[in-house]
Length: 269
Image 1 (cartoon, rainbow, N blue to C red):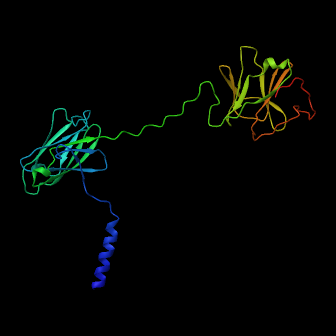
Image 2 (cartoon, rainbow, N blue to C red; image 1 turned 135 degrees about the vertical axis):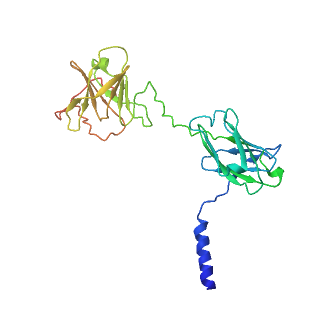
Image 3 (cartoon, rainbow, N blue to C red; image 1 turned 90 degrees about the vertical axis):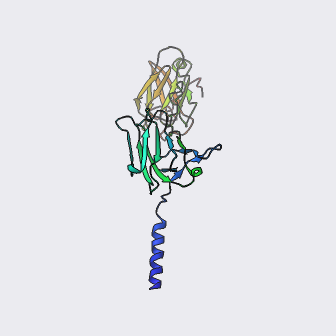
C-alpha cells in the first residue's frame, strides 16, 4: 500500500510539474516609495494589486485609453466586497475593500485598446499594499521595411554581374549601350543621349534570335531575363553584348547563326 501511494504521488508530481505557473505579476516599487508601482503590460499576465482595509488603491491606464466606450467593461468576481469606480476620463480605476472577510477576488478591465486582468488581494500591513499601479507599454514590433531600390539602377539587388563586354565596328558604336549589367534575373543596358535606339534581340541557345521582352526606365533598357548574348540591330548596324559572369544559357562565340566565323574590325572588348 505504501509503495502504491508513493507511486501515485510521484505520478501526480510529474503530471503537475508540466503545468504553467499561476502566480500573478507584481509591479516594481518606486525607489521613493515601493507602494507606487509600475508593471510592463502584457495581455497574457495577471497583475496583483494588494490592498488594506481603510486604504484606497488606484490603477492608472494609458492616457489614450478609456472604458467609457461601447467596448468598455469593468467587472469583479465579488462586487459586494469592493468599492470600484473609474474617473470621468475612464483611464483610472479606484478600488477599496469594504470588508476584511475574505474579499480576495479578480477584476477584469476592458478598454478601447486593451484588456487588463487584475487579482485583488487583501494584506494586513499597509506598507505591503499598492497605492498606485501604473503600466508601461512595450513598443509594438516594427514592420519590416522593404529595401529601397536604387532609382538609377533598375537591376538593383544583391547580385550584380557586370560590366558586360561589347563588340562592334566603328560605325556601329553609335548605337551601342554605354554599359550593361544584370542581377541574375533582369538585364540592364544604359544608353547615353537621345539618339536612335536599336532593336534588342536575345540570342537563344539554338542560335536563333528573338525580340527581347523589355521595358524602358529613363535611359535604361530593362530586359526581363538574362542571356549569354544580346544583339542590338538598327538598319545595317550591329552590336553584341555578353556578360562576363557565367549565365546558364549557351553563347555562340562565332557571332553568327550559321556557324561561320564573322570578323568585326575595330572590335572593343
